[in-house]
Image (cartoon, rainbow, N blue to C red; front, side):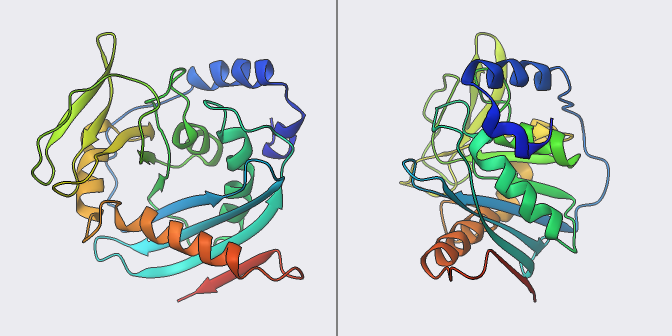
Length: 233
């Protein structure tokens, strides 16, 4: 199914599609060298059809921006918890297709397998784009965990019954943890280590922090006669 067709789905059909995607998830050790890291973020008003998306490519591990694509599109798919990928992925994928550089790993602002059907946006996008993906979310969607310690990089496993589906990671003392889970073609241990390497001065790792800043800047400064902005640095 093409992303452009998502808005025709009823919620129950979207859930059925997630169950099909779940069968294709591959959580495995990533053996290739990581030189480029990508990140995506989306901005929208849940009462509006407009969707703003940014994909940014950074050198790794020094976190220098090499390329970014900003895109505005629209969707009719409703705002439903657990199904947000159906609103967000089409816009992110449109931006992805405009990239000249493709990253070795993509980090998405949302869940990987730490999702009730194991199909958060990082899983969904990873399967669609056939790229290793990590979900790094600012809030928990699924799974139980104990609060990690208050030191930087203290962590606590997220569990669904007896299955580990992610990690609550303290990136800064006295700040809420972020929630890390693999999406596709990478394992949990590598996902955690990569997120740690991407943390600088802020709670949010640098790739998704920059994507968040860029998408909000794009949304605020959007010119009606331009639906795509593409920059190489």
